[in-house]
Image 1 (cartoon, rainbow, N blue to C red):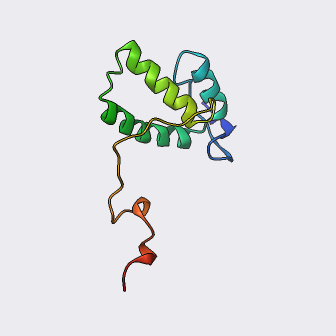
Image 2: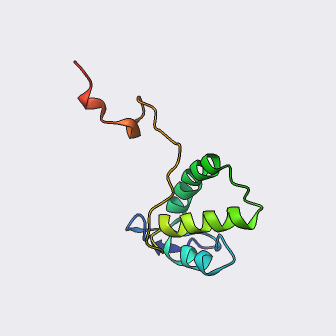
Length: 104
């Protein structure tokens, strides 16, 4: 199957798209049409923070509703803020701060 290219709304560039919609609803269709595989992979990694913080049961309707809402906000399909998570980057990680500002 030839690789699909989409203009990713999250990463703002043309990239390979998903092979199929990730959800069987309107949000899944929008993600399939407007989100790259790279951005989707980032979401999968980031979504673990929500699952762990809120101890979500993704088999429950409530857990699924929460995650669909977070995905919609994450990709910019809905206005709002993402739910806070308990995640804190390690001090020695690039996300934890600017290493060039360490004491000399």
